[in-house]
Length: 129
Image 1 (cartoon, helix red, strand yellow):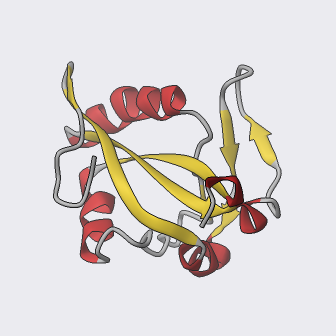
Image 2 (cartoon, one colour):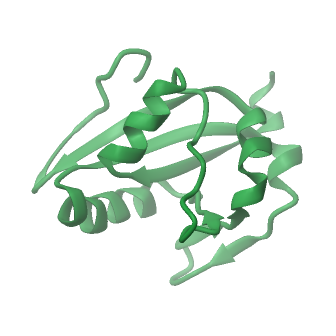
Image 3 (cartoon, helix red, strand yellow):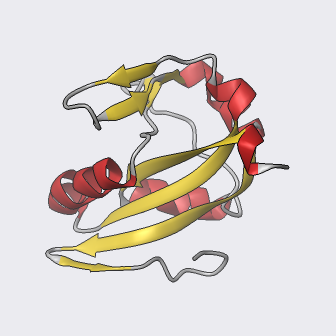
């Protein structure tokens, strides 16, 4: 599939969600919990880094930045939400649409950054990088 037909998205995540992604063979996001009605991928690597480093690390000890490609035709259904400054952009995908999102992922979900405390390193897990 041509890259022009896909949209690159980023997702900051903690270790529990990442383990569930690993269990899918790096192909899908896990179902949302009842208190999580929306799945929030972001449109900027820098924004994903900020969330992983500033929110995931304090909450769980480790923050990961993942990236993945989704068919643009699917992504176009969801308006881009500006939730802060000009580069703080997210998609809000309702939890009930997550299976369809997963069906529209092209390739694998990749770990591209790992944060522990003040340290970071590129993703090095099998099938990544």
